[in-house]
Image 1 (cartoon, rainbow, N blue to C red):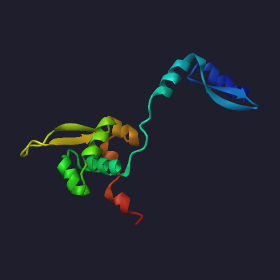
Image 2 (cartoon, helix red, strand yellow):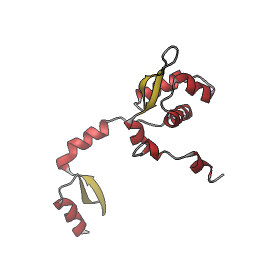
Image 3 (tube, rainbow, N blue to C red):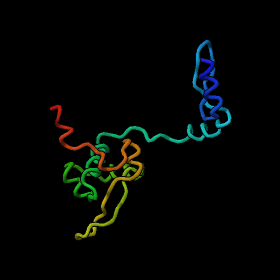
Image 4 (tube, rainbow, N blue to C red):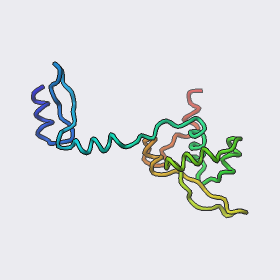
Amino acid sequence: MTTLINAYKDRNGGILVAEIAGGYQMTTNPAYAQWAKVLKKTKSMGKLSIAALETLSIVAYKQPITRVEIEEIRGVGSDWTLKILLERNLVKITGRKDAPGKPLLFGTTREFLQYFGLKNIADLPTLKEFTKDV
């Protein structure tokens, strides 16, 4: 185990292996502790409600899409849900539709891809992938 402890210490990274309470623990390198404190203070996004996930999936698969089109698919109003998704930066306004009233168009953001661990929007599962097990 000493070899592992020394290997982490020699590479001068953000993590060290320490012998603590009769065992071993991975700890923050004191040289980088200020960065760990900054990360700890950042607020996690938290969980999304069913309504938010439903709306977000519609936007992801149908983008660019208007609020009215989302509501036609969901069958309920989506004003509040879209507001939350915009605040969390999972959805953005991508422009205006060339239609009467010039409604806003919504699409996903880079944060959406990061939240779901996707490289790009093409990595979303297809409908066939959802129905394989049924």
